[in-house]
Image 1 (cartoon, rainbow, N blue to C red):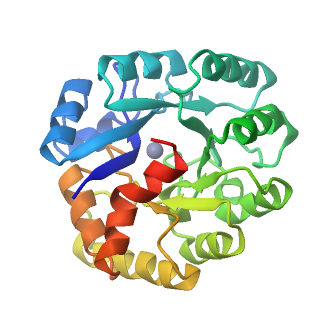
Image 2 (image 1 turned 90 degrees about the horizontal axis):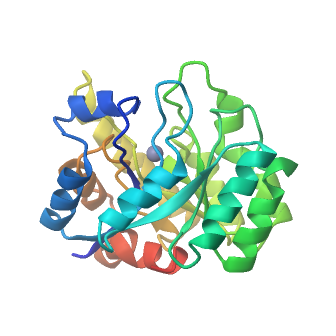
Length: 273
Ligand SMILES: [Zn+2]
């Protein structure tokens, strides 16, 4: 089965905050390992997103572009946008300079107390709409204990989706644990999608039971939406290992052709891969 991974992190920064996840998963967490694993698990391409640093700032987008170039056609950049006018200008410049190569934008809801419909992001949305590039939003549980759950709640995307009906919006992590809220967004808005990346970490006391609960919750959310056409596979590497993420996706209680759509066909369409 062909796979596209729409949500990967990697950097060469010694301040990368995802190193703890990598260690817990027994991963080296570097570009070489990532490309080898993609080969091993039949992952034809992936989208690379900036990981957070220990100081809370994302690794610079230029670093993400550099790693993508090194991957020789395997990885494509997603540009992470912070909520400031200067960051928006920089991101737009980078996206325009790398037009066709950049596959979308990412906004970190919850890590900044800014709602997605805030005017600071307007120029990103204008450009994304005009080029048909999706904007991915972190939704749901945050890795930081001081982040704002109110802003990370996927329902905060409803106002934006109402205003911008031709903007492709991707709710990352299916809004975990707000699966129902995310399902309603997907049901209501033709332009809202969800990825299933980064839903679990290994090693907790009830890991096995949690995985079963998750498979049931995500499957039921998809029943509510009524189709799997807008659900996209991702690992959130190094948060999930490929072996675990693929096993989890196969465990969804859906028809086989829908599993295939989630693994690659939907991402191909949404991100123009
Ligand atoms: Zn992520």
